[in-house]
Length: 270
Image (cartoon, rainbow, N blue to C red; front, side, top):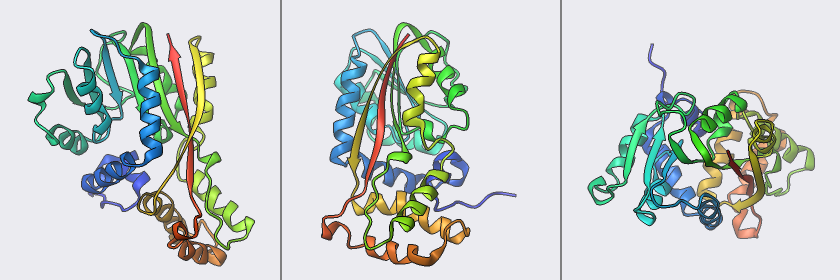
């Protein structure tokens, strides 16, 4: 029996067969436009510091927006976009003719089994990907195995335990219950804070720094709004106070309230 496509954004990223590629792609474009994300991308580029002749793999590249930028900005390196969602990978290749960017290629595959030779990569990049992995240690091992000696793993991963939700007129208990529902929507809600220690345990040199970014209402509705509505439908949240909180968020931006997400930029050198 074929499973239906879901509106749940997280489910779509976890299980490609359940996500609509156009919906996921539209969300990725919207996130890419956020000023805070642009600053994080700059910090990641600085941490990766790719050099001519190196090979860079963007693991979980999605639509490959930043992947393509890296290839264009660094024509002397080989850039590989890897994602298990074949529809997104195909869209990535169709954004512009790849003939214009000869150092860029796309591959469909899981980061746990990337079908790339061990020790064949100089830089591995992940961004908002490891939150969907059931075993964070296994994912770290797989990514590290790709790196040559001196190679760098540069990851920006979210930490849902440090999310700032606009309170509206909701009680602290209501907002805390919503925060808990947000955390329970992901296999690895604390990926950002857990990854540095997991990497250090594996004997690599690690540097970590937190970064936060605010979201607009379009992005908020897909990340927060839909997660909360799904939790209400499934009976995981008591509707008392939550539905009123949801309604208030429509005007939150006009009231100078904000929602912000925190993640950790981790750089590991093998």
